[in-house]
Image 1 (cartoon, helix red, strand yellow):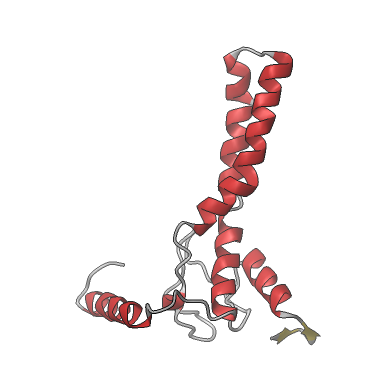
Image 2: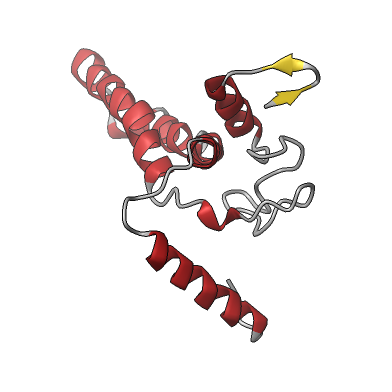
Length: 146
């Protein structure tokens, strides 16, 4: 995996693609067609994103990395200053909300790139995923939405 003549390790490649939302195969086109919605195929190299199953991972990591530490800030603010409730509405609520929502695309990009580079898949589910993707492609061919 090399772009701009700069060799990268697997970890650097995963981090770079996740941070920028780039295709984990070519590193050229965006893996997202909307805020958190993945492309079906890479417009540059044609990579099929059927392998990607980040599920609830982005929300989980966002909550663990951001919400959990910020909750300590909220408790500290309450214990030390005992502010009225409107102070939490002005400070704590926006911090936790934005802090959890803002990193979601980066975390999802990181998880998708990590799945691709490491060829991660739950053991024993290859046949099930193949059936689900075949059913989804048949539905799209019949005019259904994804």
